[in-house]
Length: 266
Image 1 (cartoon, one colour):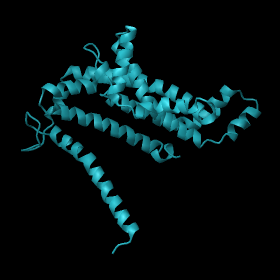
Image 2 (image 1 turned 90 degrees about the vertical axis):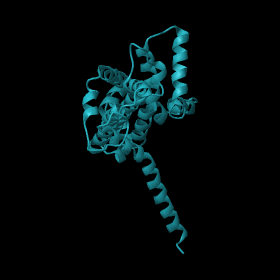
Image 3 (image 1 turned 60 degrees about the vertical axis):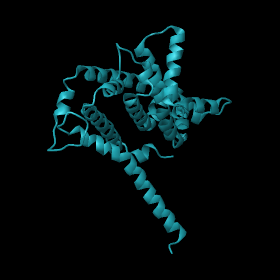
Image 4 (image 1 turned 135 degrees about the horizontal axis):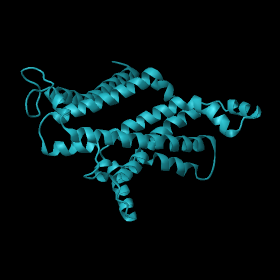
């Protein structure tokens, strides 16, 4: 009979592989469907084809929606980086009465359903009489991406040696000079990683965007969702594969340049 710890290790390993298979298996199916030569969603038979990747570039609505998604993602990520750095510094460095509410407020988009956030933003702007789809998307995406920058920067600040700042201040540096010359360069990898995560989350978001887009301005995930609702061809699979590859390449670059273990250390 195996000892209890060996059984627990076996069970944990089996469960981990089962979860990974559950997550990866649908992605493998999507990749396979994207190479089918047939006119409907099915596994490739009779050889592989790139026809749906080629036809993807002929649909200008997808290209325009992708440009819109990138614009909103860049604006939201930049805003999240600024607000995330400020809130992380306040959370890690200072102790005040509203510290816990601040942390709860900043990280709340992680556990509030996307649909509720999108509906809340839509209701808020409708109450104010603001009909700009771009502004609504920008605010909603900035809010939902803020926690990613906050968490990575907070982790970087937690391992920062404050004696460096004290030494700089004793040598005559101002608080602003100390931040830009001493603190910022050392937490920059955390800021960069958080910004990349924010960019990916914003670009791939559909839960919030589906409430906030309009006929004049839409994003790629929403355009893809709309297209899939009335079309049964494998082009949706091809576009999905491209979006997955972009996210994987981005994460791979972060790992190669900085190392995720270093950025996410506690």
